[in-house]
Amino acid sequence: MRAGMSTFVVPPGPTGRSWRTIGGMRNRRHDGLARVIEVARQVLSDLDSDDVPAGLARIAAQTRRRLVPPLERRLLEEIDRNDWFRKRAADVFEEARDPADPDGEAAALFLLRPEGWEVRLDEITQRLRDSERSDRMTHLTRRIAELESEIESWRNRAKRYRRKADQAASKADRSAAERVRGRRERESRRLETLGRENRNLARELAAVTGELEETRRRLGDARAELAKQRRVQRTAAPKPTPSAWGELDPVGAARLLDDVARALSPESSFNDPVVTPVEDPLGLPRGLAPDDRSAIEWLLTLERSFALLVDGYNLGHHLDHARFNSAEIRRRLENDLVRLKALARGRPQITVVYDSAQTGDTTCDSVAGGVEVRYTNAGHTADDELVDLARRLGRSAVVVSSDRRVREQAEESGSLGLWSEALAGWMLNVSC
Image (cartoon, rainbow, N blue to C red; front, side, top):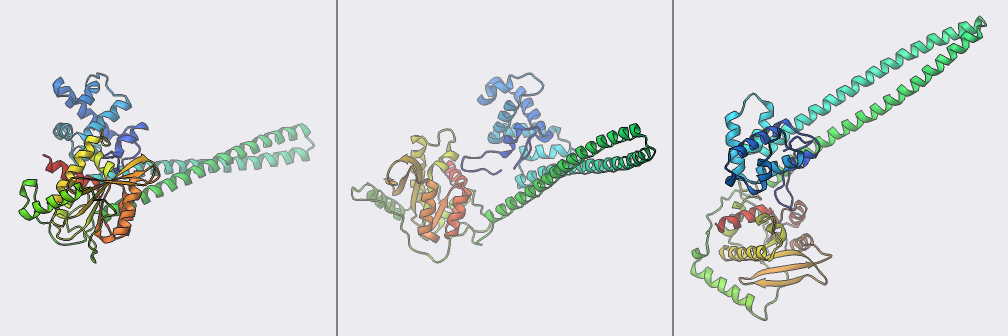
């Protein structure tokens, strides 16, 4: 996932889908993604002015042969997040693709995105970086060998000059001896200079070798993390899930009315979610990924009680990254959580936590339908609150966050960790 860049590596964090490829363009270009830029500009030139995405109008107007780096990054970002535009570029790229072109493979993975494309793209980039470092190491090794040979040559010459100096001294040729000594001093200084250069190159070679080993270690960690997130914990197949309020049965509708009444009661208050203790931890069935909305559909089919703990602004960023902290997005998010609670068979306790700069303790509120809303204080983040709740609830909790640290700490307490992308995907689907 890199483009003319030094590295492609990606995982997105709580700030949303951000392709690591694009950040690396500050340093240099990569021929593979240069091909992507070329195809994308061709697509822009073929579009009517009304069809050009708003953010690319300036790029479409460019007539220079090569875009400046900021515009290249902007174009790649639009391709990454705009599925329609990327499909148009992929169609044009497929028509011009040369199967024997190795650089085209990276561009094809970035545009077509077959299953496992991130790992394959990482492997291609790693090979390119390994090859580059290997070439650099070979060059440095060769240069060191040349310097060592030159040093040996100067040493041999110095020996000859010493012999000449001794001969001149034995013949009492003082002037000749002075000339030889002066030359010998110059050669000694040259030897000292070459020695310093040799030591500096040796240190640079060691640094490049260390960087190569660190890169290989990080790639191994990334692969292990991917395997961990997709590890199968159960074999049960997910049951079909209702998709709208209208499919509630009479008992479910009555339970929802009870929750609404309790939430609107002036005597109602919220403490930590309370669910029936369980022995077995929650685990995704075989074939389900923690970042896919099918994981949420599976949760809705569970008969057992559980607590759903949600990072509010983290989830809002995946619903609308430009207005993720607005009141409108919070209302939409909370209404969808009410809908989820109504559709779930296990009657989950749902808590959504927002970061806040308020003073004092964390405050609690509720919305119709029994969803608890918490605002943390300035010294206690939403991540901290989610981890604290997960430790108290243990195996009864499901924590939703794109922050890997939060999910891992929750899983250490026996809770199930899901990505915000999964819940956002479910909400966007039921809203259609």
